[in-house]
Image 1: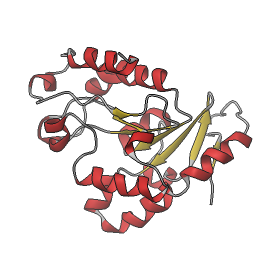
Image 2: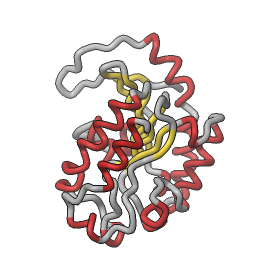
Image 3: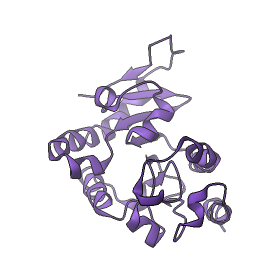
Image 4: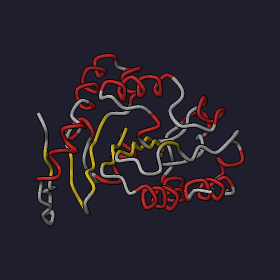
Length: 201
């Protein structure tokens, strides 16, 4: 049994949040245990709750297209969410739910040891880019402790605002070059209001 499979069994037993009682199934994540790139979204939706898999609804179909545009597929990356159960009525995750699920996400990152973490949406972005707004930092990267953190809009944003589709596609297209570029970017201790960011045009 793999470390991730063992972790999934533990997550399935978690009932720290009220939403765990209403879920159809827990949605821990899926993909390669040795993935170079880890995508972190916000929370499962209705489709994900039914299937127990992340990003399988319309937003997930767009994510599949985005992955294909840089010659990747789901089996080559790892996909997860900040929280592992569907919030009632697809509402935004509560701070307490994010806190309760954080150890699960931390353990996933520890097991996978990705070279890059791509945040999809503002809730996963807030974990690594505190105090920042996604409209200002999408498409930029921060390197810390050997990991590249890259901020993107959530794929669902393009479904609600068609004008964001090209922006999201352009940001995704930066990922391969960022992985190469990161090898030459030195890490420095961040100063107040200053992040060690770099951007590939």
